[in-house]
Length: 51
Image 1 (cartoon, rainbow, N blue to C red):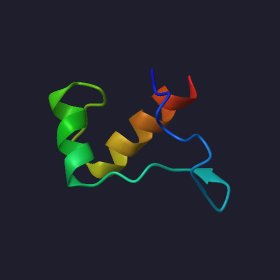
Image 2: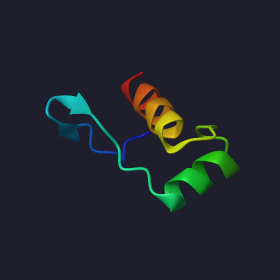
Image 3: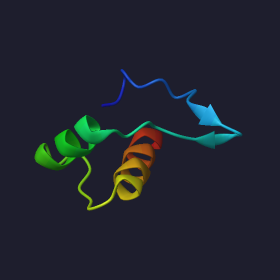
Image 4: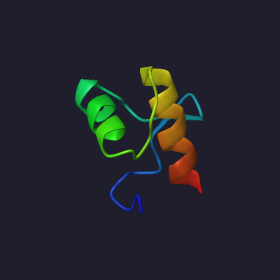
């Protein structure tokens, strides 16, 4: 499902995804990762990417 996301995005050994305004809005609109904060969206995207 997330073949386009580079799984080597790390910052000091932690998996990370940059979630800006556009990713935040699209994630909620497409129900890919629902959340009220950027941190929650990032957490859900990372866990679904690692599954």
